[in-house]
Image (cartoon, rainbow, N blue to C red; front, side, top):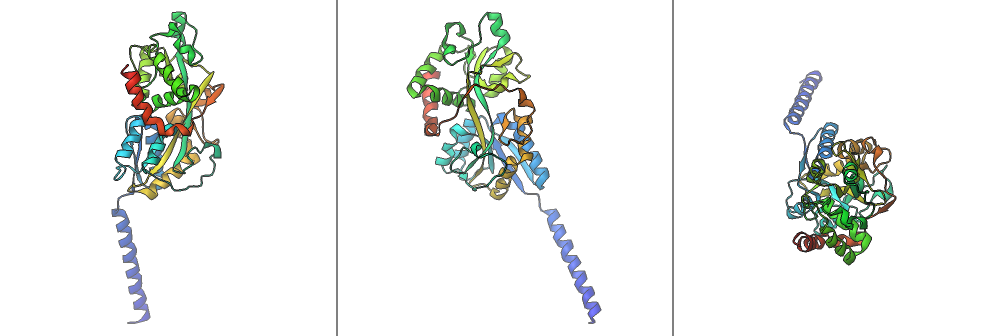
Length: 337
């Protein structure tokens, strides 16, 4: 065989190999990533999944899973064979459950553009995603009709004129509710905090303790509740008109994103964490979650009018191991009377 003929054969073989590899790549489905988070973060979860899929040519989907507390406990139950790869909306005040139970993978990422003070997990497993404030919010119009001044402090809520007007989410079911407990106990100390909660139980509206953010928001819209311990974002949410926030003091609520140790697509989940903390990912936080991004260069439009508290209560990590104990005690001593 001549050299020319040999070259022709080699070229044909090379073309066939390239064609075969191209066909193989077309037949392979895109990599799949499953993101889990509380139902209340669904808009952000879907937005992140869509943008990540487009950017990396993968099939990323978001799965809502109850409230933040319910999600964390489900992650623990399914830790050996999770159907998800990465979790968003992991609350600072309840994340140590995941650490203690060995649920998370800790990739030790170095993230540029996010200030050092935003990182709250010393284990390097949960990365900061967003933040906002929980405090006293109230329907200004409804209080005016009742001839009542707005409450400004936690102790104000115990005044007899506010009886039957107040609520906060159930901390057994809701991350917001557990954050309320964390705030009260951080401010007042543990035993004094429980005494306060028992007194506050006598002030609760007929609607009781809503199961989560959505049910509380609906109660505020219907007028079933006039005063709530909840998100400052109610004061700028067009769905809850006439709402204002007492700015004397508020609790800093912080959420994170974390890779599951036994994720089927762990490497892709790590890339998702990087994306969620990039400017492109952080630009989705404010528009889709009514929360503040952790990057100072991220877009903020909805939260421009968010009330700012005069003093901020930051979570004490030493309380982390007591979250489940508090939930059980609340069910026993507050919900059951």
